[in-house]
Length: 347
Image 1: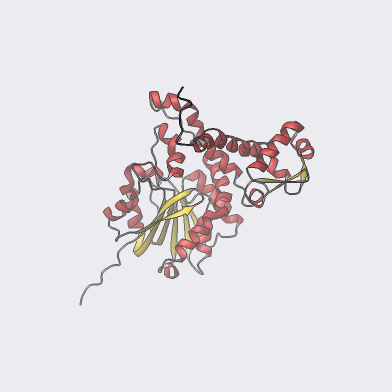
Image 2 (image 1 turned 120 degrees about the horizontal axis):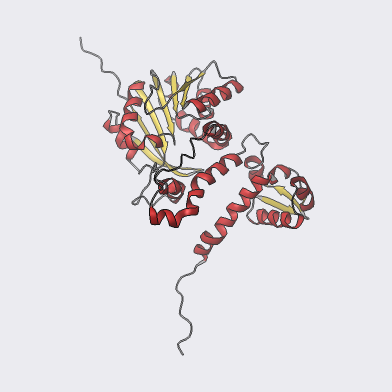
């Protein structure tokens, strides 16, 4: 009798990824859909929460216990309450509520993977569904993105551009693919006199115009609508900020990069913050997984590390300085390059 086989490895990591990870996601998405976090700004019993959401008391209790287990809700003496993070990010009345954007992200990243075996076997569908092109979708995404940007993206952008040696001299900045305009406004507000332009597709530009008006920034921030692959993006900029916005130009990045180059004044700065896949497109994990659904549907929009920097150099930018930053979405590559100063003629 040889006895049981000897095991040299543990399966806890595989179990967590396969079983527990999806349960965590479903707990939070269900709580968002039911509005659970909206009722937990103060301690409440499971019975009170169930009554507020029209839920089954026993199953509401199980949901709340699960949310407590994963540390987004606390439980004290039988009463449940949001954690500080949940109150800030998952309660709808918070100015940094990102629940709607999280649900969009789940749809984009995870829904296609429901058909993963079929997609692997057969390849992308003949006509990939244009999930982002339905009527009003871009505008709704832009609205949801405003809180997303206020919850960290705007602060990071200001930190990056404020450290540029040229920042104090900048007079006009462009946020290319600027969405609802929160980041562009934050960059402008960090400077005493700079003006800004938010460029995005027309549906999004309309939202940005409303957001700018809501923040009383019309005197310093303008909006330009169009498709950067085809339309002019303006000119006379000292700073161009492009964050996670060049993916739709991935397969002709030099064309858009050249447009950015010509839109900058001599000595102007381009700051790019984008994904950069490494190790044969297998890392960072967050970026590989985040783009998986898009790729399986035939929409490969992920940059490899160095793609953007190489394009900068090909169109005439000066040598690029770059580093990888930790962000809420995972590691992203920061690439900064400059347009050469105009050479003065000799007398």
